[in-house]
Image (cartoon, rainbow, N blue to C red; front, side, top):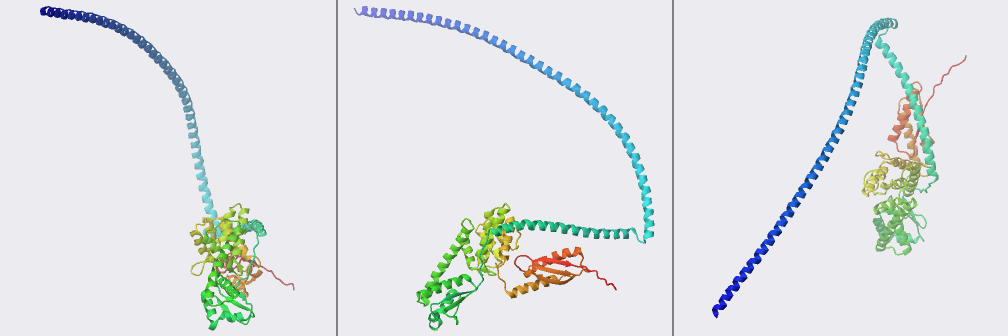
Length: 515
């Protein structure tokens, strides 16, 4: 029974193996058929691709050949055109060469003619030179002088005539230029002055303080003079108590100190308590009040001329000019007037009016400095303005308004002119009789120091000098240069307001008598 199962199992296994082998063979045949089909398809596709590639290569070859033929035709056409151009150019060159040959022949003929002419000219010049030498020798014998001497005489005569002519022409040009400049300047200055005016005050070194009664003088002096001594030591101002009824005088050269002392003394008089401690308190309060007044005065001046605000230090220095004077003219009022005049004249000339006004307002800022700063007020003010970063044109205008440095801009010249106008107008500045007489004497002395001057007269309050010269010593030509030399010496040696006109008078009188 067991063998049966074994045999059956073996037969089953064999049958399964045969079946698997059969299925494998069928699958293999199917795979081979598929591979064969794929190979057939690939072969067909490859043939198709080769055929298409051959067609495309043939088409590309045809296109390349066509392009090559087109390019060849174009090149051939260009070459033919170039050949035509070369032929034409060669033809024109041949024509030009023929013309050049003809011109060369003509030039050679002309050179020959010129050579012959030169030979003739040389021969004529030689003959003329010989004639000139002969004539010169004859002239020297007749004139009894050599050619060099004759040339010197002729040259001297020509120089004298030329000098006189140049002098006359220069005088005409200078007179015309001065007249024209004066007309234009007068228009501008008159226009500016008519639109600007400023008040003027008298210079003073004292201030008067009124008292309610005579007893107040004793209280100001204090016991054994302690109050007055303490007051004077703190303010640096002298109190003069004299016989003037109900008044005392404050004397001092520093106007700001004198103003502080005046305000403090008036406060003490109103308060009634006058002793050293109270004096110190009132002086401190007065100092603050005067400083505020200084700032306020500067701000009012800036507003009056319509300018932008200044730096605090510039503002303070500008306000100090309220308490300073020059020849009796208040410097702050003077600066305001110069600012207006400068702005108006700059506007008339088409320049920057704001810069001109600012420069005019600050031109005398150096006069507000105390005595610890050395130098002229123009240069001190220039350095101060430069330090506070003012515009370079303003800095130059401040430094050059008295010609201590060169004016680098037209605004500097305008400020200088406005300063002279403000200072020299009638009534603007006072002058002592002694200094006035000294200036007139100095003017006459300077003019008399020149050779040929016989008499000198200072007239028009020292604004004109009439110089009478000897007509046999000074010629008309020399009188022109003499007036310029005298003016230059006056300008360098003398200080004066405005300008001085120098007039040289040369008079020739012919006198004869009938008997």
